[in-house]
Image (cartoon, rainbow, N blue to C red):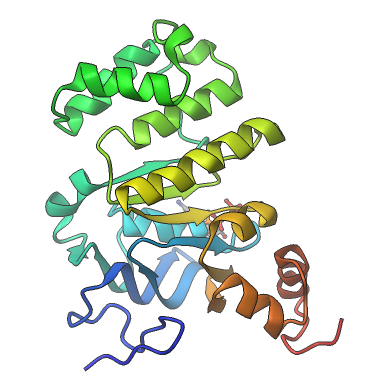
Length: 265
Ligand SMILES: Nc1ncnc2c1ncn2[C@@H]1O[C@H](COP(=O)(O)OP(=O)(O)OP(=O)(O)O)[C@@H](O)[C@H]1O
């Protein structure tokens, strides 16, 4: 029987007995030729939580997300998404999850409406015209629905990408730096939308971010990675207390510079 401690950690994160987590990763490894990008990590994303995945450049965040989505095959380890083994049960899972990253572009010559239609059809969204109208209203897309996607500003592109990511009303949303390169006002607007979607849908979110204020505001839990390994995994307040810090930015710098967790500030 799996044991879960008071903050939700499991000693068998991907064990078949645990049904409550949105994501359960156990002893996951990814080696690219000579690079051990992900080096034996285990963690879980509780259902309904927003969990932050933090780490410096090259820490292994994108590789971890790609394995969770079944896009990159693990070298070793186990992954369960919404109770299903990945990548073996990918077909049962893909319709219930979605992904957004500003680094993945949509076909640029298609209009916003055409792009949303193609993605909606992939997910077999019922009443797709109605769903697109709803998302256009929610994300303030109406003025450029019939413009080519490649001709939008970064902020407009992000709003479209998020609308695309929510088109199938996913139970689990994977986000890779969703507010990178946005002005503070637009980034705040996106964060409010994510929070309200999580509440309304009871969805779970895994958020890779370099923006520590964003993580402090949104995340119930934080997993910190460094060089492919997990350095810490807890609530933001417990992590800040452990490092004697008042912000996650200071914790991030401590981890990046190899300062001990119990170091006095
Ligand atoms: N397809 C690939 N082939 C070879 N090495 C790769 C590949 N993808 C990632 N890596 C390497 O794996 C390591 C982890 O990269 P990854 O992109 O997962 O990190 P990250 O935490 O997302 O970084 P960033 O914050 O810079 O996006 C890096 O050393 C990277 O160079």
